[in-house]
Length: 305
Image (cartoon, rainbow, N blue to C red; front, side, top):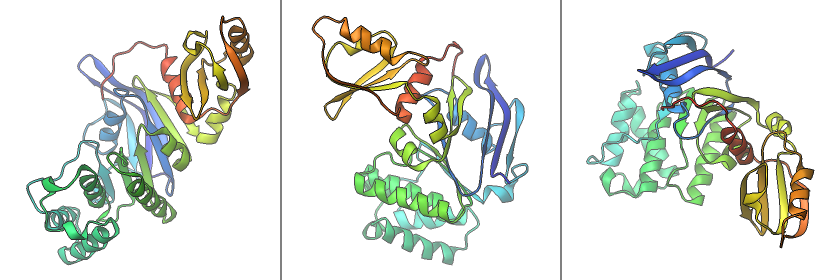
């Protein structure tokens, strides 16, 4: 059984091909990462999954069949562009939006009170949304997504604007929902969150899926494409190095696919003024893999999302 099955889906807007032959499946009880750079086609793919856009070709199944109006009430969607009524008070707005998803008003009020308490927003229930901080508005948007107890959550940049305490809270709530058998599709640029939370991912670039599968399997596939170096040198000038960034006193280098780490070491040894104390092949992070895959994409197609 699948929660979402996207099969060879394509979508164009005039001459712009936003999505080209994208396929992936998402299963109950998993946190699935839908990734890609800006303009890759992620948002268009999400909108086709939710029947906001119709694909030009291919098919999408939701809960093992076409998306119906009844099934839409089983989905919670938090878009990156937030959509709360900012000139209205917080609690009544949340109750109203829950009723639009088929929740009885009395039940909605109870759930709103519970979620406001958990998100430390109870004292702001009668405040206008426009008077809340960005982080508070983000938490309110998350509550809207959860109030009707959906079986499928599609959340775009769920940690945007949150401090570390609330980031941890949202992360724990997502993991709780997953443990209850809910399906979560998470789109974010925070690769460390994806690496920590997602079992499987799809990476879309220029409208095509270029990576798909289990995170650990993908990391094994890219073993040897990341280096950790301590010392000083002109790392940006090294052949085959896609990105060099410094973290905790060490340089982390993302390499082109197939680039021999020994060739990088030799280039460092020949570089005037280079002083290297430590050089080792490291397990690539998902961020390293993201950078390597996107930067090496050969196809030059226009994009839109």
